[in-house]
Length: 310
Ligand SMILES: C[S@@+](CC[C@H](N)C(=O)[O-])C[C@H]1O[C@@H](n2cnc3c(N)ncnc32)[C@H](O)[C@@H]1O
Picture 1 (cartoon, rainbow, N blue to C red):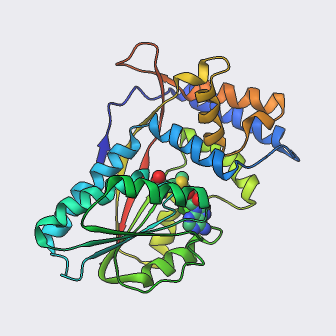
Picture 2 (picture 1 turned 45 degrees about the vertical axis):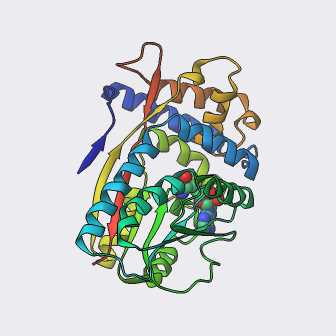
């Protein structure tokens, strides 16, 4: 199944070769580089908000959850004890508030409360999560956020849903995180993982991630291999989204800089001049003119969703 926004034409095969050439040059330029300065927690929060705000991916993910809850709750009514959901790597909660709103709407008539738990090691994101939920004032949803890594989270079993939305990449041992998550599910519970494929945008990101974290980043393709090897039952669908990147072409644009920082997940101003130039050339190459809005450019921003369990 594929869920799509209005999709601009795909870049040509020639462009594919050109971007692989640029990536090779970038890899060479990055050898021995000591300029990879990670984003501070504050800058991560800021750039993530700007990045998501220019993509239609989050609205599509929220719609996906809304449809999934509707089907799931129609098929098996939650118990009167309530519906328990854990968001792993919840971040600021901009996504979770919307997911919780859809879930509360689905369970409202069943007299069933929702217990929504978030976990994230970034303190500033957790504080923003609390504030975002307080502002939303969801009357049938009990909310809790735990400021730690998922690996260190101590919690009882019994979640009806545990989701990882773009968070599994950050875990040093994603396999044990998945095993832990599966053990925390209630009988009949589901694990939901939104994991990007390694395509045009992430081909660039991964050059920096693999160096910063000193390990291979897990993308959707690698995730499939794990699920197949473990013989876990799963369903996979593609959410085809677009990231609007016009500010990348504007000189001295703070929005353009925020987009670039979040894409490479480091302070891009601290990169050497040749690396900055290669990053800029690469981003221009994978940007496509909008078919609907003159002067706007987009980069393909897909994500795959996996539903795991019985
Ligand atoms: C790209 S953000 C996604 C946030 C949110 N799920 C969303 O889609 O808006 C990834 C989040 O994973 C968190 N994270 C990183 N390492 C983690 C870990 N070991 N356990 C739990 N969360 C982690 C980061 O702090 C960050 O907030």
